[in-house]
Image (cartoon, rainbow, N blue to C red; front, side, top):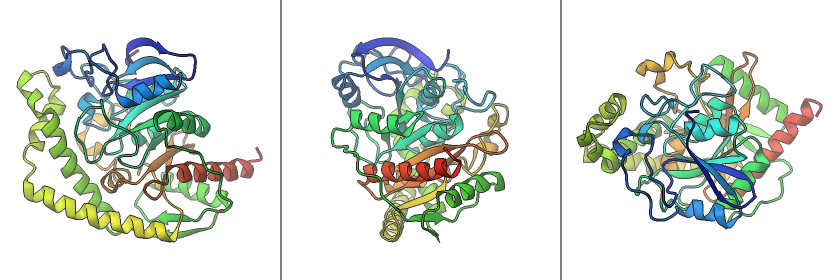
Length: 374
């Protein structure tokens, strides 16, 4: 199965965990599903998050595949193979943490770890119909995680249930302490342009929750999306550009990497100004409400055939990448649609309020389940 690239049996008899192959496990090469790293030297130490899992008695069962070099959102990988989407066959698994999301969706792991630089946990979580969480930037250690330097990337968990996601956070972040479920959190409904099918699901969930809510706008959302790409391009080229010399980077990723080298210092400086402006907007909005609510993706996941069209892929991360730029914690909750395809409900909270965010998600889900009679 192309979602598992290396079987393991490390640790205790706690939850079974699989980790994305950008995360070091001592004695194993970290290849990031790229032929250019096929002969990489084995890691000499566990990543901090791997050591944390072992310290908690988790059982590491496998490393998982990904979109090559974690530089893409579809999960399609022509060298390592594309992880299947277990719950929605024929649809993309999402990227870049495709194998980690698919492993949880297939029931192969109690939870898994991915990394999220521009939506790379939340997008595959949405595509595969599972929970995916991007913690506050800097909250979970990235030591031993590729790339070494990033101003956007976060290690985050996937799980099939919210309680298991909380378990995962407690394992990888010793400072994570669950908080009581709030009675009536205030929802800020972010105005976005999503497909009518996706918006219908989101609107129904908000109405079904019966929680207090108000509409709000984030004027710099689109600018933050664009600025996030500038930062990703620069930082990814700095980390992986040297691999182009091997001639072994997949053609699709090689073209993106080569183009990323054209990111100018001026563009980067402008992106950092947008980062400051958008972060201030989100912080201000979260002074008025407890969480922001918006779709994870603007439309249903593409079919594998549709995803070969680079134009069709554009915009998939429009609602997730901005919160990498700002650094706020963000969660994708799986919802069902009348069309039988997955929709993600994204919640965003104040920096450092990761526990509150997951507690509010629990309250939202309780309301929805109660509304459905169970």
